[in-house]
Length: 113
Image (cartoon, rainbow, N blue to C red; front, side, top):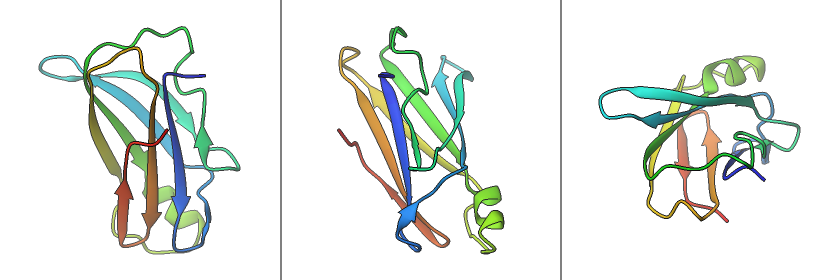
């Protein structure tokens, strides 16, 4: 399994949010370095965002969720065209699951398992 995974749930619909483009980045001192791209599957998940052989670096990461096109496909006007989730990794031996709970006018995230 990828050392960083994500899952998007559309809480307004009560369903997984499929088809959301995601970009994973690492903060490399003065700029963001792109590490991976993916799209949420039928279950709203990206389990293979990074190859499972990828060695994590301690530091600051960002997952950008492109929500505007998702809301457009759903025929909904959303307030957040993009949701950036920034988090820190201290223990590189652990797995990091970063879910997003999404609605047209709000979102929440947490460290999952």
